[in-house]
Each structure stands twice: as C-alpha cells, then as structure tokens.
Image (cartoon, rainbow, N blue to C red; front, top):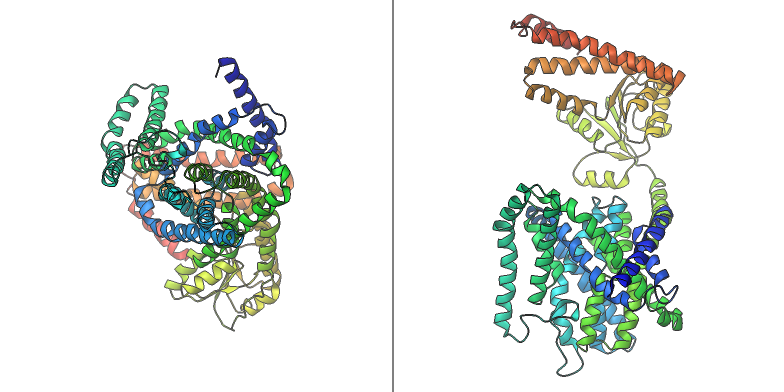
Length: 635
C-alpha cells in the first residue's frame, strides 16, 4: 500500500471514529456501536470510502483483540485465576456446550446436515469478548456478579477456541479436506505435517517458554530497560513482548490470544504490571476501534438486502437461543433475576473469534461458502444489536424489575420488645447489627433489598423485608416500644423522610443516622437526628491517626488529636447547618467555613507547640486519667 493511500485510509477511519463514537456515546449507545456504525457508513455499501481493503485492515486490527487478552491477563493474578476455576469451567463449559447443542438441534431441524449444524452451533456459541468486556467496563458493571460471571464465560470461550480449531476440520463432509493449522486460516505452522506426539511436544515447549520466560527472563529485561529511563523504549519493549508471544503461538498452530493472555497472567504479579497496562492501553483501544470499524465495513449489505427477513430472523433466533441458555446457566449458578438478564443481554451476540472459526470451517469443508457468508453477516449484525439490547435492559427491563421488587409485600413482623430498630442492613448497618448481636442486644432489622434479605436469611440472620418510611411498618416493627432507631440506609432522600416520620410519630426514640456527607448531615441536623455519623469520617480519622503515629508522634498524642478533631468537626456540623440553609454555598457560608478552619488550626497549633517542647511532659498521666474518667462519665 502506497503512503498516500495509507494516509487517506487512516484519515477516513479516524474521521469516522471521531464523528460517530462521541455521538453514539452521547446517545447512550456505547462506543462499540459507534465504531460499527462508522464502519458501515464508510463501507462499500453506503458511502464507499473503503472497499475490499477493509478485510486487510480487519486482519491487522485483530491484533487489538490479542492485545486486549494480554491486558486481561495482567488483571488476573494466578491466585485469582485459580479461584475462578469453578465459574470458568462450570459456567463456561455449560454455556458453550449448551448453546452449541441447542443451535445444532435447530439447524438439524431446518434440514441442514448434522455436521454443518454442529459446526455452526459450536462457532455461534462464541461471544464477543471485546464488546462485552468493553461495554460492561464502560457501564461500571465489571465488579458485579453478572460482570464476573460474564468474564468467566468469555475466558472459557477464549480457551475453547483452540480445541475448536482442531475439531472443525473433523466435521468436514469431504474426505481428505484441507486441514488448516494456523490461526485465522492463514500462514504456516511449524507443527504442520509433524506426528501427533511431536506437535504436542512443540505446543508444550511453547507454553513452557512463555511461562518460564515471563518469570525468569522478561522481568530482568524490563528492569534493564527501566534503568534507561526512556519511556518510549519501555513501550516498545512491551509491544515487542506482545507481538513476539503472538508470533510464537501462531508459529506452533495455537491461538495468539491465548498465548498473550498466558503471558499477561505470568506478569500479573510483577512490579511492571501497572506500567505495562498504562503503556499498552491506548494501543489496545485504538486497534479495537479499528477492528470494529472494519467489522462494520465488511458487513455484506448486498446479501442482507437480498434476504432481509431471513437475516433478521436468523439474528433474532441466534440471540434468543443464546440468551435462553445464558439465562438458564446464570440462574442455575445462583445469580438473581436482573443480573441473569444482564448477562444474557451482554453475551448473546456472536464473537470476533467466529470470523476466524468460519474461515477455518469453510476452508476445511465443515461449512459451505454460502452458509459461512450468511452466518458471518448474522454475527457482524448481532454485534451491532448488543448495545441496543443493553440499552433496552437498562431503560425498560431493569426499571420494571425494580418496580416489581418494590411491589413485593412487606414481611409480617412478629410482635417483640426489641430495644433497637435498624433500618437498612447493607455494608453499614450490617456491622452495627452484628456488634449489637454479639453483645446480646436484640434488634429488629428492616431492609428494602429483597435479594439481600433472602441471602442473609440463608446465612441464619433474622431480618425483615420492608420499607422503613412506612408508618404502619414502623408500628409493626415495635417502634413505639424501642429505645433506639438506627438509620443506616444509603438513599439520602428517603433517609430524611424517615427521620421526619420517626421524629413526628415516635419522639421518644433516639435517632442515630448515617450521613453520606457534610450537606446530608446538615439536612439531618435540621430534621432532628440526635447522632449523625458520616460514612467515611471514622475510617478517615483511624487512617489519619495511624499516619501521625508513623510520622513519629506518640500513639497517645495521635489518639488525642484524632479525638479532638472529631469533637471539633461534629460541633462544626451543628454550627454550620443554619448558615448553610440561610446562605447555601454563598460567600457567607464560605467565610463561616474559613473561620471554622482557622479556629481549628489555632486550636491544634497550641498542641504542636507543646509537642515540640524539649520536656517529656507529653506523658501527662494525670490529664490522660481525667480524659478517661470524662469518657467513662459520658458513657
């Protein structure tokens, strides 16, 4: 390709991405759909800015998938990978075999030969790692149960590509059909023509080289390069590592993506992990973007236009069948209904490895060219459907599920004389409740998260589903006979409403409330909460106290400083609440806040002067004794 042609192609790809992706993101469709739309627009069937060279670009851009697997491996420390072995093998195996079997059965019922139906089923069982992981990460869902389960299934699929490459030629209906060895159906493998035991030995040697090299060779090389303090050389070495690993794996007929994933896992515990991630991340993002543009440009709209209903039915059928299997696997694995639906929507498309496997299946005689072309279009278009499915899930399915959950009838609460009533049993209220329980103080607990209630009940804990803002439920929970009301929910508006209800109907209750921040605390002060605890104040003071101690300040002085800070800050909340409501964030509030800060600094300056004095009067046992007596008296 000439330089001018290359520059023109690069300009078109980048312009399409720069125009389409921000628009797609602004419309809430995600970047992947933006790339696919960009590719379809500049492809030969719409604007025609790029032609068949789009296929060549796709082969180049597939390296983005390889690089993504390397970065995924870097995130997976071997211990974590071992911990995930159950979900990977269990959920991943069930999904691939289940989806393959269901689609193969449907294909056979559609009068396709059995071997073709099986080949199509196994290939279509693959999902798009790039689309699913990137979309879930963009939406902040990777840490959820659905995100972790999706990752486990995708990891199994990536591993399953290797045996599939070996199995597909065996499904050929032609005797003596060509058996491709290299990934992507191109290139020549060193294992080609070797006896089986020699191929196995070659494979084992390549994997051992990656593991051993990553542990004993790559780290010293990176240390040597890091000492040069040339950032570009470190980036070049990282790219060299990924390309070298991919080349090694392809040369022995294995998946380049699997090889780089393995190299990433080996380096996951190295001191260079974070630097590798930051250096390779821009390359991965750009190459993946080009890959999706190439996918969009390669969709055969001529074929789609000639059989629109047929293609639409095939896409719908594939997504439906995969979605049903994924949903069943998720529910059987213990995921709740919303997360099972999320996983089914995120993984129901065809994957990038499908293009590779279709190529191998076609060249090996397992699939005829016309069926392979049709399935390729189905897979490419299903990728474009995934962001839309997730949008439907977010905007339509999830709100209805949450609404239905909220419509669940509250639990019947048996009459009791528990002295404490706790509203909210999440990460905050849970600790309070356990502390009370181990000290044999009974509490009646209400929580509005039905999944949380059902899960904790299975662990033997006693709590009830119900909305603590409902007056009838507070009566049923024994609020009129309790002494303390602990408000531990994280919904700011609802917490304020509950305080008003409790203060108006049960004025005898002492309210201890959780506040998300300073402004929330002001609102609680105004509504009459007796004790307010900001979520992070306690842990922040603990950390600050430890920092003071590590900086050489005696432990008792660090403890005293933290205690004094808390007392001053809590007084400040009460003093500043009225100023906030009167002036909001105007100058008067800012000036009052400055006065508070200056007063605190003046107070602590006295302590600093005492600490810097040469005498050892810091061990003032008399004052410590007085402080202890004072605290005891408060209790």
